[in-house]
Image (tube, rainbow, N blue to C red; front, side, top):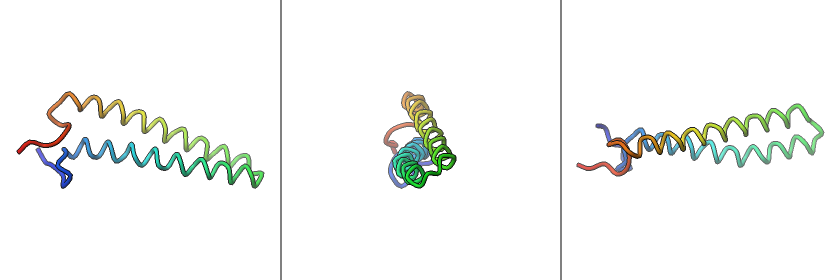
Length: 80
């Protein structure tokens, strides 16, 4: 099995990375919602809100998948 430079299996690292970026983007999108609302652009604010919800769902799905691989030999520090 391939192990990334982090010492963790690639799949686990990849899921954690996607989850992190989805959550980070959600934080940024909150500001975008406020900017659009302050500009009176309700449709754009709704677009950003929807994008934020999609990212939150993506992060939640990653969380489920991380738990799934947690019980297998594909999760956690790689043993050499």
